Image 1: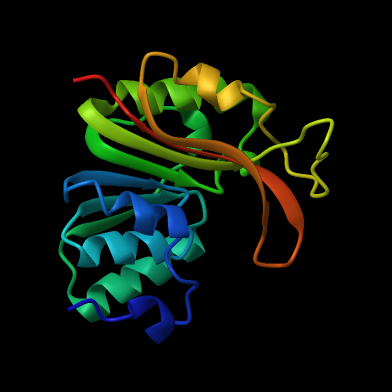
Image 2 (image 1 turned 90 degrees about the horizontal axis):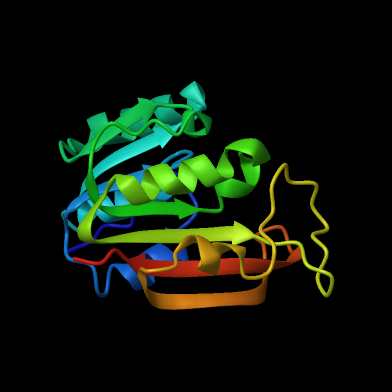
Length: 188
């Protein structure tokens, strides 16, 4: 049985797209990129995924590590890592990157996506949710990076797009934004 660790520790629930992806992805070695305090990592860990959770913020990683220790979860590793370096060192069956890319240096995004793709095992999955800025829906939040229409789809040419949309959504603070949402499977 899944205990709601997120509410127990005052974290937001796991991202809805991570929850949806877990309906088709079997537990495997997983990377949670930009994990913050670990809302997705804890959810995935409870489902039996072996999770490496990375974030540039040492305070967030310390918070996650204290929860991991308290709950005795040996299938989650929490590491301080700068995603901007585009230097993943292990291969994964599932890489999740939800609402993270918009905080990345724009010059590094292509390299980061290429690194994610390279480090995904054949038949493995990438999940990306990222804010967009388009003519119809200019992004009202001054993120360092936003996707343009079709940009994420183009980056995953040759992958099986399980889900892809560029819909307007609402952030937890109420701001209306257009997001690119993609779950893609690497050819086996």
